View 1 (tube, rainbow, N blue to C red):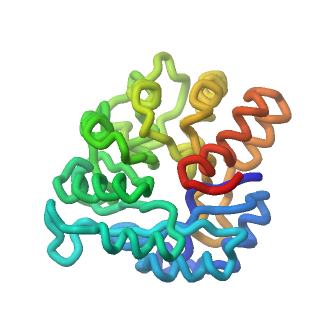
View 2 (cartoon, helix red, strand yellow):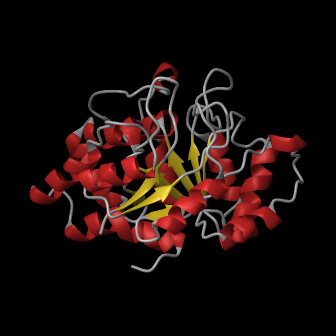
Length: 288
């Protein structure tokens, strides 16, 4: 069983074809993915089109054996404040089958009071949050943190019931202890001479998980193969296989890479099972 923690439907920009459910299913079959988390898009910074939570839930109802729906909220919408009550809508989305919240892309600081309010209520509702981490405010999408992830660490301390799933360049670049500010929004190459803050936070906080999808996750575990093998085995209980499939003719190099890792016995069979399925089942409350 392979569960992909990160996929989308919709249109990435004006030039690409719609990536609808049929195209996503075909891509999943191509990469031998059994089930996939389907993430709504609600913040205008990210996709060309908004893809509402209800649309995602409807797609999942049509393919219950393939898709696992998440819901999504933009903490800025409709004049939301630091005390806005999201509990009613979160419970409503849970009733539609949603198992988490994300991909969060609103470009506020990740510890903005509006985000903190949402994180607290997601924890109470038992819904993990998946976020696209950014390195700054303005010109990008995603909640922003500083070098070393101090804002994220404060949230992990403040909201222990909330499961946080990190994603994107500014999250994964922190795997390297020699990371420079100008590298945070890129795919840093080369060997990792010393573990970074991400290693420390994954080790210290039980409520932090890491989404291996997209070029950012794949680069982090493949740029220095020996370090990547160690990282996958060391944090086998905290990592989630993903692709970020979201447009036509997209490659997903992490899929054949995991097949290679298994064939070459670079990670244990138990670790592979956890990363590709069991961890997702556990945090999303799915049957094995």
